[in-house]
Length: 391
Image (cartoon, rainbow, N blue to C red; front, side, top):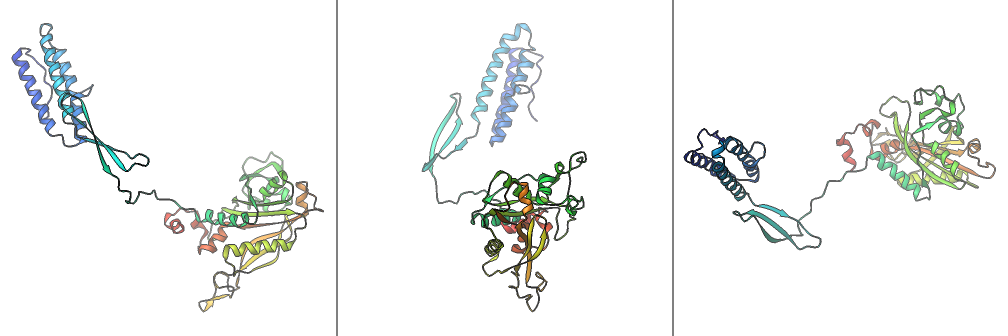
């Protein structure tokens, strides 16, 4: 049974001797049971704690409660008990080893601290060799998300061609997202079925209304506003459209758009640039072809296809039609065109002296082709089992 401090009804020398002997016997019994640092901490708190420690209770139940004529003798006994308890608690403290390595040290000093009697702690300094051939402990590193990894690859291709990188806000005004890019006021893209508008904007003029950008083209306008030709930039970033999520669509996705403006830039420059970029991304055997399309901010405009990287442009694979290119041998990848002269009016460029081209590609679209993913939603579900494949 655990020892508890009794109240004293008799303060005679014989009664005090008996009470002290019982306390010291309990002290020795509990000290002998200390086998670890955790045990010692419990033992120390039980005897020395300020609020409920046994020494505190001895002081309250014995000394403070003693009659006036017995206080002197009881006080002497309490002081003796206190000294004995503190000595015993310190004497059973286990060794505590602290190791450290210094810069360039060939040994690890080891400090062993042990209490011995009433002389206080004793410090022992030991040394042992450090085996530098043992493998270190490395923190496991994460990996780039496949979408970010693909976007960085695309950007690096154009960086090597001398393009700089520009970024802009995801919350844009109607002016930068539509008007300055030659979208007329009644263009279908301005409809809420295609664009996510910020609520409570009805009282503002149309050009000042806020929305989530539907492409990174506004960054091109902002760049031309602050920079005179020549301009060569790529604009990577996240964009938003009011699309229902399925295997090929997501309301959030990423784009890399590019712009080159200078004197005497032609459609041939555009074709050569994109042909080089596609070969850098998918291999030197990839072919490109351009066919007419329409975008409000480019004229003429074109869609770009690459020869199917799965069937080598043959349209057949494993004895049957290639599913990836629908047996056509070509995969549609991005849009491009020569910058419409109307766009230059918004940035005070002289369309008679300069010309340029622009292009834009969906990062997830390219990531799906590069990594053979069949559902765009896998990129956004955060399933570590899927993502760790790309580490």
